[in-house]
Length: 446
Image (tube, rainbow, N blue to C red):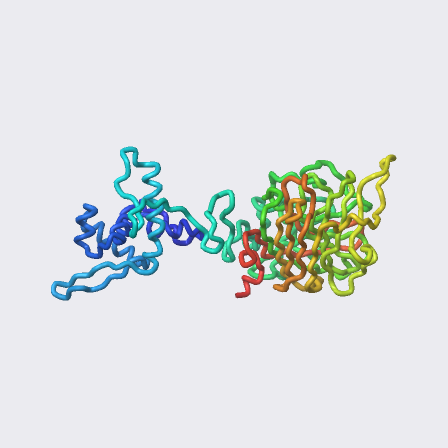
């Protein structure tokens, strides 16, 4: 049976094993560190069959750990010399020596590492070259690098809305569809509409999904849509994440309804939420046709939250957000269970440092490429970073959301107060991953 190749995996451990994971390879490198270079030296030390040794030496040469050098023309003979890459692998072998002596040598050590000058026995440990600190698991951890791939990616190129990734919220007033005429990249984009007309593509067939969602026909059988009700056409991402997860989201969207949000009523298209919380910790909102972003902060009062304006489109009407902190208190109820009205409060925006770098672009009639970096758990070290069309828009540092929040989840699509105006939103090139490069929708343009 052919062994699975690790060469195409992004994991550096897997790629390293692709080159040195076969046990003879490491033993050949061990002997190379002892100074051996010639075929007969390796064969005598290892007792390996000549054909196997030839294959392993060739593999190490192809992987760049050894270099083949001719030392005799008659007869033709080559030696195998460590390259810089091969020499750089030496600490790994030394770590194996120490680990084997510590755990696999009940009879005592047969090989040990010593100081060349004094002969003192050495005990190798892993240090960080930058800080000089021992790399203990309490202080260091693996993290996604700049080239990390997305753990979820969906450009809807399957020609459908994949129920393994998304859970649509079917309701009488909405339609989910796949578009081939208006796309960000590739052949398809997802679409969602409120009060759809006959000009749109047909609705995708309903699928049974595991994700529980509130207010949907498949979770509330028999629900009847009333014109005075809230309206929504949202896709819920099936995968949730624990609070505080460091995660990047990227997607493209556009709104093809010029009157959307023009009436000043609530319109949200794109939300990051916490289980057990009413308002989204980060939301893409629209008022008077202007795009803006808000974050939420928990307060000491039950049910009360602070909404903070963090980014906006040129021409935005600030009437909802008092000058200064650009925030207000909302939610909760009085002793008669009557909802309290929004109000400015000194406690709002507490502990937040907001760096606003550029206005948001308009998504009306044009694709906007969003990238959002979140690490949120209601703590002082929370972080929210936002880009649009490759340009940094805003950075928020400080407590966002609720410290008692549980899993966090993402949903995309229009959610609005009652309206008689049709609304169409298109959505493409979604990704969730560990770096900007992994999720940036512009990666499809390169």
